[in-house]
Length: 415
Image (cartoon, rainbow, N blue to C red; front, side, top):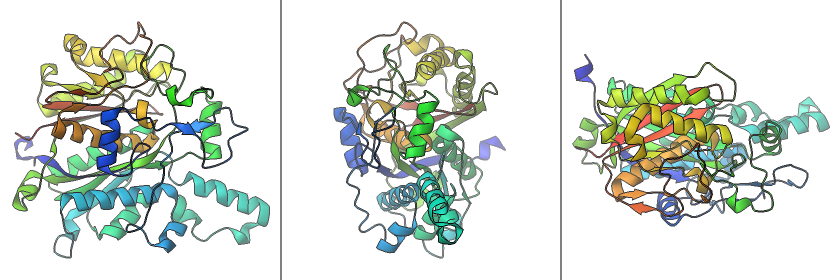
């Protein structure tokens, strides 16, 4: 039975990120080490302990959303739908009645419509229940990026949303990969979307001591694997991939970025926020992905790390990589694009999978910027500060989330 699984390839990409609102701009930003972090402008953060974030900037929805849609949709859904439309356009796929039932959507989100929840709670408290918007629930629920993307694209196949915190985008891609392998769809539009730079989102993560508080120098605050890291920088945006079975992509002469070959997913079953000691759950996810892909550690050319810039994640992820890849871990370039984009929570796996696809196509390893102080607990090659050009055949992408969720995706050049 396993021999009859369909191969799955990437044929389209979409990206709304703090360093660029198109795939080309995002790639240009990664190549140059562009920094997407700055003072918060989405609300008055003057009383907050953390006053900076990685915001999406100058996003023009013209041509993607109608003005009425922009008013009635939460920000995370807008990001997801725009990125999905970008990806579909990039793929060249046309969805119509003849194929709609074989095209599915799966967009993960850790939080969903947090801004809607906050603003409508304020309306309830200030003006009473009769003034709460009738769009509150459909704007707020985390599956709505998936639902609105399905409506916008006319996709009638398997439709779902994943809410595994910061692993949500990668779980959505991995689960879509499985559906395609099994022949349950021909095409999946998948990834993650998030927009949690809100007063409650920032205050909540601040109270949990998860964020950086480097208010005097926010542009250097996201510093994964650096000894002076003090927390993550919250970001927002969306990354979407078009996945297809290889047969379907070849039948329509689609351009192919690469192939997904492995998916590992585990749970630490340890703590609501802290990773298991030594990153054991993450290591097991990586081992599963390698086994699923039928490759050994010697095949891996690059790892896009979860790399949040928190003290606990980066040292534990380093341990996980060593456990999963053994001696090979010392030779593999590892970088965290969160150093540039901040941490998009449920959207991070989406934009990082896009980064992996671009790395395969263009032979580029993005840098870990703001790296200045080596940490004895993080002693691998983190591609400090400058991108590298190098032919890549196999890359891995790690995503870990609150609740102990771990995901590893394996990609390779199409053979």
